[in-house]
Image 1 (cartoon, helix red, strand yellow):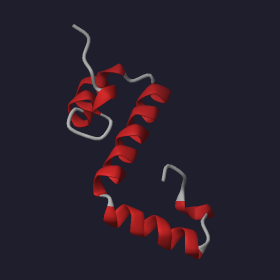
Image 2 (cartoon, helix red, strand yellow; image 1 turned 180 degrees about the vertical axis):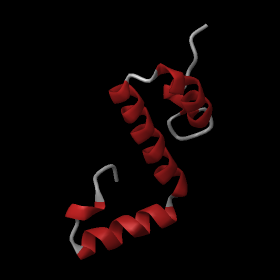
Image 3 (cartoon, one colour; image 1 turned 180 degrees about the horizontal axis):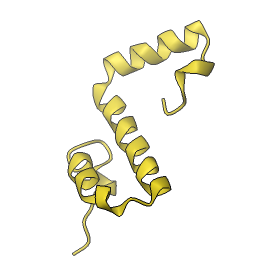
Length: 68
């Protein structure tokens, strides 16, 4: 689900669309992880707090733990 749709054949695209439609929280988790990867690549620490807020109540909440 983190790969681009461009390289998928029709059956793969239909399968991925069905997964995304049936598991919106999984799709959101994918989006959160992609955003994190982009933030790290850009070295944009200003995006960290909003990302933590977004990830806090998601399937990837264990990655959104704030240091004390």
